Image 1 (cartoon, rainbow, N blue to C red):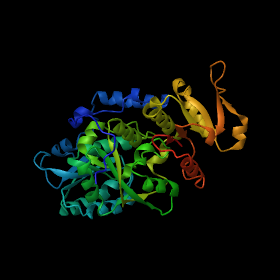
Image 2 (image 1 turned 45 degrees about the horizontal axis):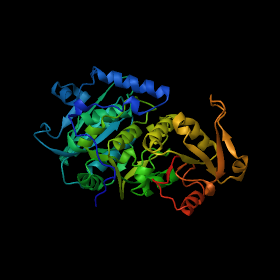
Image 3 (image 1 turned 60 degrees about the vertical axis):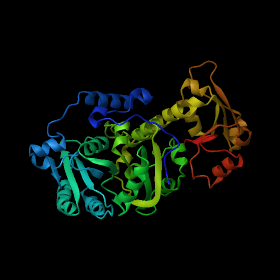
Image 4 (image 1 turned 30 degrees about the vertical axis):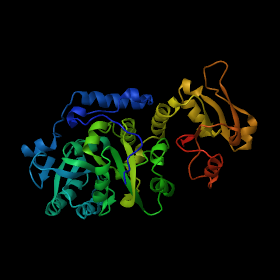
Length: 426
């Protein structure tokens, strides 16, 4: 079955190094800190500088620079020998998980040609030694390997490591794998088959959480979104509706979207890439098999992203994709989150807010919300009504799966359609 998004389009694929596209700043009204980070990143790469000790993997091999890069399983060029799938594996101090991760790569039942592309982001543990012990076994299985990295004092971040692993790889399709996760034996095969039909689509899968029961609400959200909700719920605090550790898509689509942002720690490079993919008409799909053991631990890079950074990016994408199409709307939630969204909107979009609606009688009795921080005179005031008296469309600022089904029942009672009459922003 074709799982392509209803949204179509996108630019044509170009040579990877000629399409070193970062998310352009004018497409986001990020906070000032994030703007400075993004500017610094883009300016650095505008000069296409290659840092000492971190040359492209293929060249380092030719120059025999030892552990900086090892390419095994055949020295043919990409044009001489086609590789179907490159498993993209960035690593940073991941030695405790790598044996399980690489064993799972070895056990893939995919019958096409595979390659493992590893880029080590200045690990200080024995990650490289662990990887080195697996190269021969991978080669015997017919999986080519390309391994590189750098020895700088500080890691350059997840976006940088992913980009380098992609640059040195050769596969027609890219399977992204986090070093602390474990793929099921059929993952590459099933996602490859789906991506062949949908080359301009980010294809994910369901996950099994480890430890079991950790982040229960988030895991349930990942695994139960409908095909339509993969596109309508992209504004929630959970981030990409198809989560990064499950991503699989064509190299040609990667060319279109551009490289991951390399701002480093605290930058949600996956969300930025996901939003840019949607802008270009890319689809989002999830296979309903559990194809990844998704590990939860305190060292995960996602913990480093500030909530305020995510908030600002989500607000701007909401304004760009949804509010720009509406003349007026209602914010569902007269409490803290609804008021924060109102204050975060552009002046033009604040004027579109007709009313706040709620179920809380105390908020409704107050009758209105005054934007006290506004410099306008008189200060803007917005009425507060019961949700049954309010008119769609709505931006719903209530946490999903936290009201005992009450929110869902209320939306259903109004006979509203998600993606048309309302969007979730929580």
